[in-house]
Every structure is written in structure tokens, then in C-alpha cells.
Length: 81
Image (cartoon, rainbow, N blue to C red; front, side, top):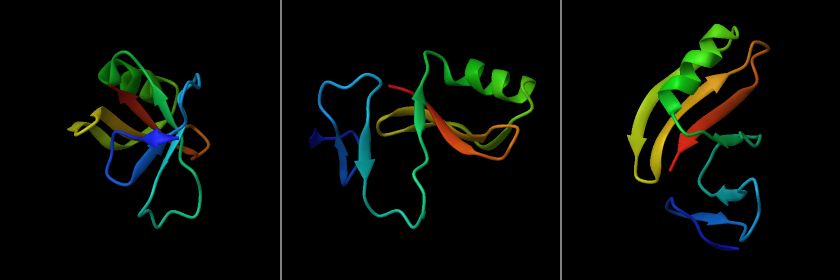
């Protein structure tokens, strides 16, 4: 592990796809973040496929991200760094 891009965050070194963890979450489950080239375009594809965007794309300290669900309600993040 090494320090990640967010406060209290850690990432696993040399893994593909990237894996990491951040503290301070009240979530009882892990919500994955998928890395994409263009978050806005990926959000459009989520909607086209029947998914929902819970948090519109926004700029964060680590890059641009959005929170989505698939057509069955499973949550995931999209991120571009």
C-alpha cells in the first residue's frame, strides 16, 4: 500500500485495475470506482443502458467523478484522474 489521492486513502501498488481504500465511510459495502477517459461520456452511456446518475459529474481533489447505479440498483463510481 501507499498513500492514495484522497485524505485517509490508500492504494494497492502496481495493480491493474487500480485498487484502494479510504476511511471515514459509513457505507456497509464497498462501492467500486471504474476509471474512464471521459466521465461525462460514460455517464451518458450509463443513462442509455438504463442506469441512474445519483451524483452528477463533478471535480474532486483527485479528479472528476460521478456516482451511478446500474439498471439493477448496484452503485458504482466513475472517475477520471
